[in-house]
Amino acid sequence: MFGLVWVKMSETKKLEETIRKHSLMNAYLHKGKAQPQIVLGKVLGELPRYRGKAKEILEIVNGIVEEVTKLSVEEQKKLIMENWPWLLEEKPKPEKKVLPPLPNADKYPKVITRFSPNPDCALHLGSARAIVLSWKYAKMYNGEFYLRFEDTDPRYKRPQPEFYDLIREDLEWLGCKWDKEIIQSDRLEIYYEYAKKLLENGYAYVCTCKPENFREKILASKACSCRNQPSEIQLEKWEKMLGGNYNEGEAVVRIKTDLNHPNPAVRDWPALRIIDTEKFPHPRVGSKYRVWPLYNFSCGLDDHLLGITHIIRGKEHLTNELRQKYLYRYFGWEYPESIHYGRLKITGAVLSKSKIKLGIENGTYTDYGDPKLATLLALRRRGIKPQAIIEMMVEVGVKPVDVTLSWENLYAINRKIVDPEANRYFFVSNPIQLEISEVEKPYLVKLYLHPDYPERGFRTFQIQPKNGKVKFYVSNTDLQILQPQKVVRLMGLFNIQVKNVENGKVEAKFHSETYEEAKKFHASLIHYIPFGEGFPATIIMPDGSNVEGLVETSCKKLKPSEIVQFERFGFVRIEKINLKLIAYFSHK
Ligand SMILES: [Zn+2]
Figure (cartoon, rainbow, N blue to C red):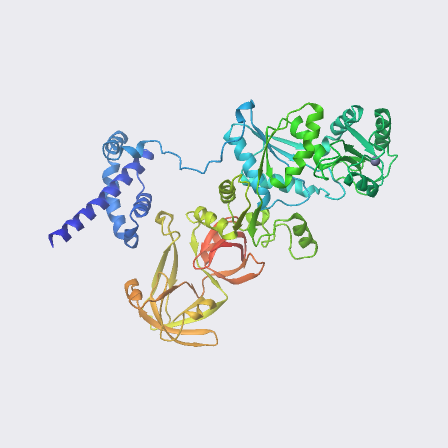
């Protein structure tokens, strides 16, 4: 008996101490004045067992806040120093997953990394890895991060004007700000200059063989007849290439390598070719140029010319590195440090540009932001936070082994981020009617916008019975719960007992009021919208389907891009609101 009283007393004391602590802190941080609602939120956050008693606690809070506010800021600070000195100390930043150090970072005055997309498609979750890691490393070393558009193939991997902007938007959204932007189609004269140097010095040649003849020779480790022609002839042929004397496919500049290289794909690789830009004009420079560098040539040169110190990319680029190193040897340059990570697969996500583009052409996807896609645009629409993507990519890191993730991995990270900020509302999908009789009096339902943050306030419903009857909309998926004789609790309101279910219409009667009573009957909790409340909503699901329903009227105040949680349904991102609410489903 004595023990029980002691426990109770110490509990009350602990509660009061907690309230005093938060009141003092809140007052100290706000020029001596504490806000009771905010103090209440902090207290319930620390002592969640009191959440059901917010009203009683608020009374105690009001009393203590009043006492605390009478003190001067100096006195408040003194009390905190005496009792909770750690509250005034600078909070250490939460421990973040740190990437392994970059190789030879101290060899360079400044670490410079780059992300170099071809603007021929929208970026997706796979591209996010290169972006996030390159950017993060630049930040880690106080270096710079460049965005380089590799748009030198106007024919086969044709850049499109809208993707330059979309890529910039995606990077901005991710928060990966770039220090410099480079567009390769502005740099053709530079590539020509270096091609000429190589031709002059016998490190490259203009090959005018038929492709099939060249292939046959190179597979047999034999030189074609163009390879050993003197440099005057090479330069003459080069001028003819630039002057338009060859058609597409008739001449190509090749870099001399080892004809016996074990990988035939490395042997005398093509560096520049002719593209008929009258037929295939470049979206930025039109038909101004006919000779275009291939990937390894422009990328290899630019990494050096732009001072890139560390290249972070997928291991599918290992062969490209072997090719590019010939250029570095010929020019006497040192190859940047390169880090090659393994493949990243996300179960159920299409991470192939060609498949994405094909799906858009054939109508499988509505556009690049189709919720079925894993493009950054689609993820943004669906309410996935950039921090979630960054966290996931840092977690995956630069491991050379292949990694397979699931959507659920991303959702779990995102849920942690959005849960505290997302206010809660009722959305009744595919509504059916629920009629309750024997309701003796009106009710005012007060539901927290977020139970962990009572200071954000409530949503309210007025329940006004007519002849003892009230009508609600409930979701048709709750028909499994609303079985005859079952006791069910309407969240924040009262308990009902189902009488009858017919033609998707449920009849029930008032059962009892308290939550304790509901627990006794193992009653399920359901959400609802009273008749006369609410307005229509469409939720666009990740599989592209729509769920129709009703949301409570207080959702009218929401803004596009806001992320909310529809109770018992999931998180959604508001797309627009006028007479109807349109939202994208994020995840459960
Ligand atoms: Zn040849």
